[in-house]
Length: 65
Figure 1 (cartoon, rainbow, N blue to C red):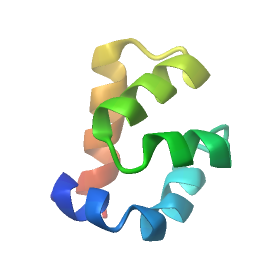
Figure 2 (tube, helix red, strand yellow; figure 1 turned 30 degrees about the vertical axis):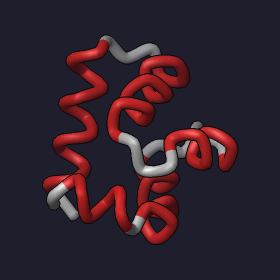
Figure 3 (cartoon, rainbow, N blue to C red; figure 1 turned 135 degrees about the horizontal axis):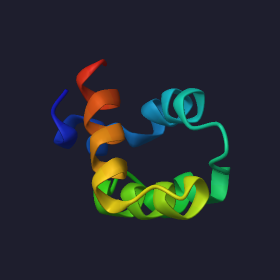
Figure 4 (spheres, rainbow, N blue to C red; figure 1 turned 180 degrees about the vertical axis):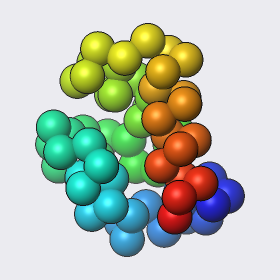
C-alpha cells in the first residue's frame, strides 16, 4: 500500500501497527503520527532493529495491507 494513504489515515492503521509491533505504546504511535521515518526510528528503539531491518519490516507490513 502507498505510504501516503497510510499516513493520511494513520488513526485507522494504528490498530494494525499494534498487531504487528505489540511493544509500541500509544505514545509511540501518537509521536509517529503517520511519519514513516519516525516509525523506523521507534522500531529501532523498541526492537533493536538496524535501519535497513526497520525499513524492510515496514515495507513488508505495508505491502501486505
